[in-house]
Length: 212
Ligand code: PRP
Image (cartoon, rainbow, N blue to C red; front, side):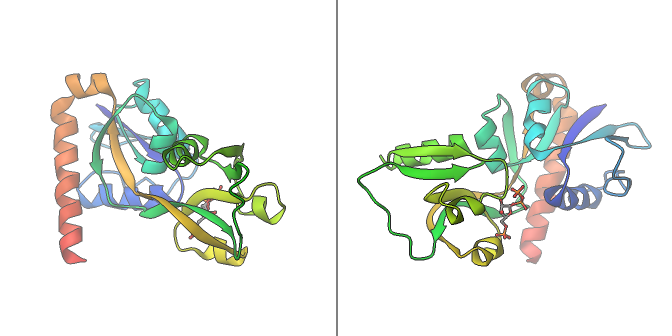
């Protein structure tokens, strides 16, 4: 049996529909909010519903063979897993944003509020820009409004949250989308099942892109 860790929430709904489209028997996914483990009627695969930031932890430790996780979470967690496929779902970008009209003082470290301290630190190090990281867990856009930070590093999808809070993108950092990841031992011992699923996903993604 293949165990697959899936993210609950916005990305999860898109992944459930992709899995249904390639013929997985997972109609129950997304229907019952309380079940955390859903097994296919045929018993071929079971799905674990976890917080997006926990998917790669389940996969790294072998509690799941494969999983689906955003590239942002994957880079931030730095877990020891294989990245198999770009699912081209949940597309957005990681960016720096600041209050409209913000002028950076290059004489002192930039104060950066973010849920992604590792990604932010790597990015500014690559720009040779000294920073002070302020790690937050949500509502990041509030930080510069309250002068807790100068800028934020966060996910931007439609840009609505930034606009509503008087912020604008000041530096693009990286494009983000969902990735299929695998446990390293599972890739040795369950390669046929993982390879088959990954192949079907790749064909479906290509088909969707052709139609778009
Ligand atoms: C994310 C992100 C932004 C928002 C961006 O938050 O942190 O706040 O989405 O989306 P937009 O550009 O379409 O407005 P999320 O809703 O995941 O919640 P969070 O505050 O817990 O991170």
